[in-house]
Length: 473
Image (tube, rainbow, N blue to C red; front, side, top):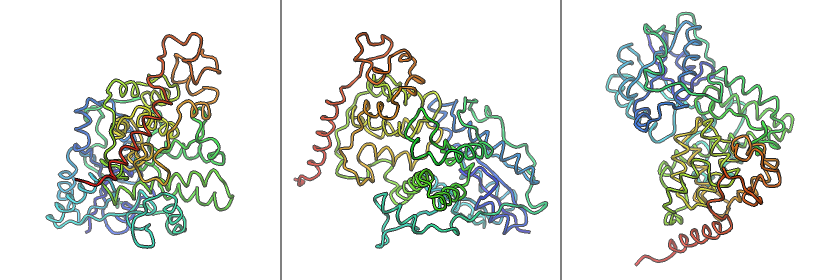
C-alpha cells in the first residue's frame, strides 16, 4: 500500500493545492505535516522577536487547516525542529514512499529542499516537487535568446502572451473516504510552546480570512487603478499576507483578474493583474540570481558611498523624520506589521536617497517587521527604490516626500491617523508643519533638507558610476 507525506509550507490551504492534489491522485494513504523550522525561528528568538506577527499568522492559519483536514477524515501533524531532520524522520516513521511538496524559490528553501531530497534518497524515499505559488516559474518565461528578462515590461508582455486557461486550472483536492491518515497526536501545539506569544493581527488569518478579504476586494476592484495609491482609502486588496502564506490560490486570483479584465475591459482588474505579474518577476529574478539578496542588479553602483548614520536611521525606523507621510508610513508598519504599497516606495526612497543609507539596512528592517514579508519582492522593491535594481528607469528617480504627501494624502487623513501630534494641524500645513508660525512642539523638524539631500544623492550616484568606468591600475 503506497503512503504519501504532504509537506505544507507557504501553502496553508486544502484546496487548489498542487502537491496535495498529486498525493491524493497517486497514493492510497496520505499524511499531512507542517514543520515549525528551527532554522528559521531560532534567529527570530535570538533577536527577541517573541511577538512575531508572521509566526502568529501561520499558527492561526494552521489551526484552521488542521480543522479542515480533520473534517475530511485526516488532520495535520505538526513538528518543531529542523525541517531537514524532521521530514526524513517522519517519512521513515510512517513508511512513506514519497514526500510531496510545492516548490519554493528562495535561497534557503532551495538548499533545504536539496538536503531533504538527499536524506530521503538515502531512505529510498522520493521528494516530489510541484509548481504552486506562481503561474510561471524559473525558465518558463525567457527572452527569445533563452535568457531571463532583466526588465519588467517585456517580461510582463511575454507573461501575458503565454497565459491561457490551462495555466489556471484548479488542482482538485477531494480525498476518498479513509484516504487521509488521522494523526495520533493532537494538532497544532500552543504558540507559547514555540517560544512566541499572540499578537494583534491586523489581517484575518487562514483560508476563511483570505476568502473574506478577496470577496471584499472584488466588490471594489474596478476602482483599484484609481484608489490604490491613496493610503487613506480602502483601495488595495490587503491580500499580500495570504499570498505569502498560501491561504489563497494564486491560480484562482489570476483567473478572477484575467477574466474580469478581458471580459469587462476593467482597468482595475488589469492593474491588479500587473501587480501579480510583478510578484512573479521578482521571484524569477531571485531564482536566476540568488546573489541579489546581497548585491544590486546594477554593478555600476557597487561602489556607492552609503552614509553611516545610526541616528538618522533610528529616526527613520521610529517615524520621527519630520516628514509627515514618511513618519505615518513607518508608524503604520510598527503598529500593524504592514505598510501601504505606495508608502513602501516613499519610505524606501527617503532612506536611500534623502538619507543616503544602504538599502540593505532598510530591507532587513522590513524583513523583521512585515507580516507579508516576501524575500524576492522585498529585495526587488528595495533595489528599485534605491536605483540599483532591475529597472528601465534612470537611477536619478528620487521621490519628493512633500510632493508625494500632497498628491496621495491631500487632506492629511492618513497622516493624522498615525501621527497624532499633527491631529490639529491645519490642512494647509499638514504636509509641511515646520512652516507653521508655531510648529507643533511634539513633532520634530525635518532631519534633512530634501533639496540638499537630492543634490547629494545625485552626486553620490554620479561618483559611483564614474568610479566604475575608470580603468583599474
